[in-house]
Image (cartoon, rainbow, N blue to C red):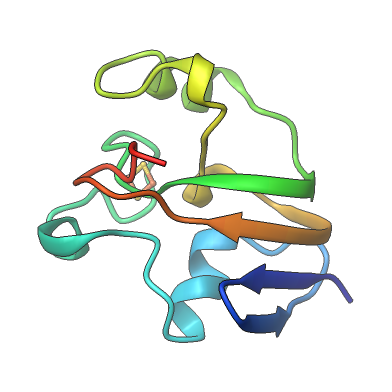
Length: 104
Ligand code: FES
């Protein structure tokens, strides 16, 4: 069972779990500030659940790639959308500052 490491917390989840859902279920928001209330609820369109991920997750598909190509995101930062990620192995997750979590 994969382990998600976020700050000083470790969460176990089944392989293939959606990262955003797991985090929220364990009381960790992938959103900052008002984006906790104003977001697309996992549709992959708002970009506010962006996080830095290290470890084994599903590859980026076209929908996620498109949203991360639009401001304030850009692919140089290497962020991923937690709502579009399936956890495949142990990962480490970091949340940046800013409405979209775009500032690391
Ligand atoms: S919750 Fe909107 S893109 Fe992930």
